[in-house]
Image (tube, rainbow, N blue to C red; front, side, top):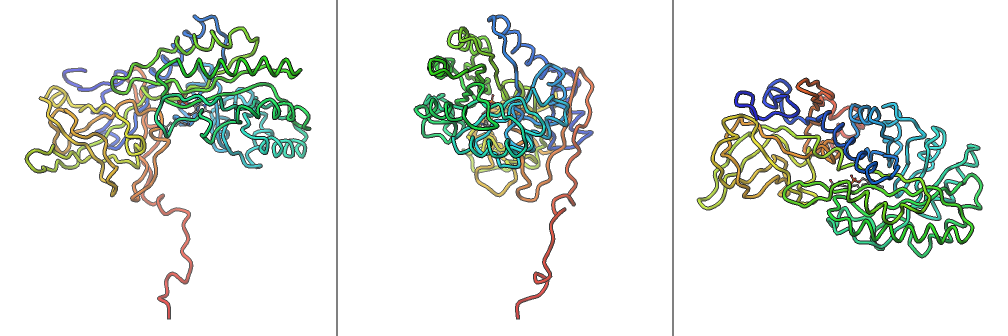
Length: 424
Ligand SMILES: Cc1ncc(COP(=O)(O)O)c(C=O)c1O
Ligand SMILES: N[C@@H](CCCC[NH3+])C(=O)O
């Protein structure tokens, strides 16, 4: 905090950015992206592990973010044809791309094969057969890893758990050996290994260890059955501290991998998204109104950002820090306030009865740790244009996406003639 400039993000004044660009506005910190990527790599190197890092771009897929992370040596984990095209557009080499996802269309498979992605993670016997057909037609070979479901509870939010038997993800544990064996016989398919991803915002190394222990056992079992296994993709999911969570350091994840898979003689990969990108972003928003409620209820702070911009609180009851950006407000006395957006949904609430410095109309606030699963999950609900985006780096900043023009909201829509006539 600077007495004059108020809240700074990577040495850039958030007040200045809000004044120049308007709000709502996402701000991404280039320095934070770099620092966290380097920390992650250093933690793995210190554990003696050689892992390739495939950034899960679903967390934040702006071309500037992807380009910066490519410069830091990251490949990408993609889950759709659109993400694949974006990653290629950002200059990420196809060979450094892993195509994951629970459902890939034939067209997406063809795109992956034609662009030469390094690895396709498959999630069912049916998908492998379809991929084989597509590969044969294109005269290509798909290098596949079987995403297995280890039936491990990651202990995270119900809606972002992916590794329990009843979750829709991955191949059921007991089917994995047979499916791997069958895959090896299919034309156009080369099974190269296994993949596992048990969920997101994971706050303990214990479920990681449980999942990787099972995967290491499966690697041995496959080999005993004469099936080659060269790669284990350990997925993502490492959690961060949004409020007061005791989030594990990357060294804990590295340790879990080393202790379980370290001596399996496989090439290791990880797919972190949130850990790299979440703390590298804030969402700036202006207070539209302060609505006084009955005596014992907190004031309602109505922002110009809403759940269509930042969906996480409405979807997962997630907690994001909120700080005013002006120096006067930053130091004001705290009182309980409820912070909401203007969208017509009762779930459009960012904070309930939260002790915050008293806010007034016109004040700008920053919603913290919104660099992952923030802008990417925005929608046009309530005909609200997508917010502008800015990137900061050591005090300099630049608009990286203009606010969506209002006319864009109906661009591409056509109105059939009959809509203009009242029925007879
Ligand atoms: C297959 C896969 N890999 C990686 C990730 C990235 O997860 P996170 O952002 O929690 O690191 C996800 C999202 O949960 C995913 O589904
Ligand atoms: N969208 C979720 C994370 C999902 C991870 C993808 N499987 C969140 O905001 O926390």
